[in-house]
Length: 230
Image (cartoon, rainbow, N blue to C red; front, side, top):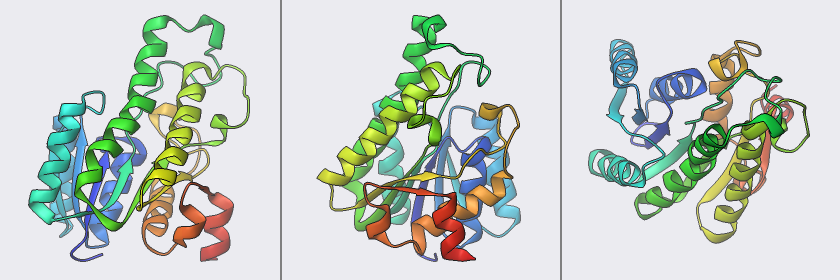
C-alpha cells in the first residue's frame, strides 16, 4: 500500500487502533483521529518505532468542522484519500443490559450522534478529497440486522450506519461498504470476542483484495473473508 493515504477515525482504542496500525504496517500513509490525543500520540510513536507513517489528529466525529479539517489535512499530507475507515463509535452501557425502553434521551442522542451522524459527517467531508477508486469501510455487526435484547441505542445506531452505507454507495462513484468482523474483544463488547488484530487484517483485505462489486453497498462478513483468504 505504498503511496496510498488511509484515514481512520476512532483510532485511539479498540478496532480503530489496530486497523490504523495494520494499514501503517502495510506501508500506507495513515491519518488517524480520535478525541484522546494522548492515546493517539502513543499510537503514532508505536507506528514510527515499527517503521510506519501515522499522522495523529485530535478530532471528534460529532463535529463536522473537525471532520472537514481532518480530511483537508489528509489531502495536504498525502494527496487523494484512497481508503477511509469510519471506526469511531460509542456504547454507553453494558452489552445485553441496555433495554431500549430504558435508554435515557441523553444516551440515545449521543450514541446516534457518534455512531450514525458521525459516519455521515466523516464520509461527507471526505468526498471532495477521495480518489475515484477510493474505498470507504464502515464497521458494523449482526446486531444492526438481528434483534437482540438489551442492545438499545447501540443496535439502532448501527442499523442507521448501515443505511448510510447503502445511501452513499448508491450516490457515489467510490466503493462504500460495511465490514462485519463478528464479535471483537474491545471496550464496546466488554472484552468478549476475537482478537482485534485478526479483525484489523480483515479491513486491510476489504480495502485491497476484496472484489469492489462484493463490497459496494453490501456487507462483507467473517465468512466472506475466510472463504476468500483460506
